[in-house]
Length: 182
Image 1 (cartoon, rainbow, N blue to C red):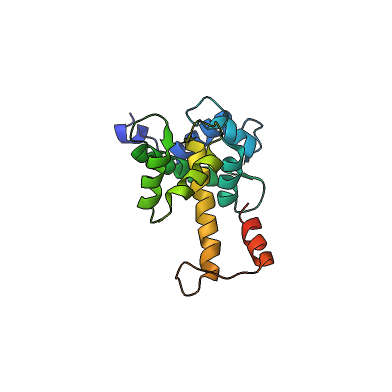
Image 2: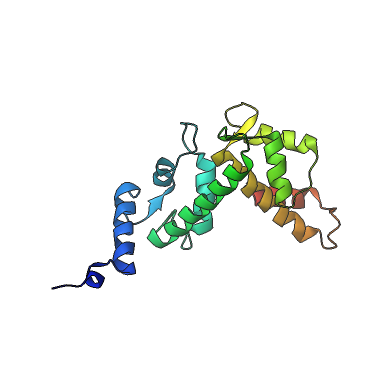
């Protein structure tokens, strides 16, 4: 007779079960690569609209180590953790539980991340990342806003060698900076 210990699933059998669920539920074409379209269909932004395709492509590009245009099962585990972490951050700053981040909540979030920006710039961010034109940012657009802001900051820091918040660049250098982000 088998003991209770023999009947417990192993980590490997759990992982295989998870892989099968993910592949059946997300990897619709069973290619073993989850494409941006498949990931977009699997995600919810809480607004009953499709997850921002630019955000999906940005996330896939972070985790697609082999440049195959999608993520495999192991990479998908990282994607899922990344999105779950962002969801927890979003909920922390969505103080009114509206499912959106307004200008004041965005300011609190980005200040918490270490950014010191003007009120005018927060208006610019809301304008840029509010796809629904409601004066607030949905979950997927919040992720995109933070990704773009971080990428632009990283590029800026490469030129800000004395870290005083000022750089001098030529027009072409500026264009290269921006095109490397968008």
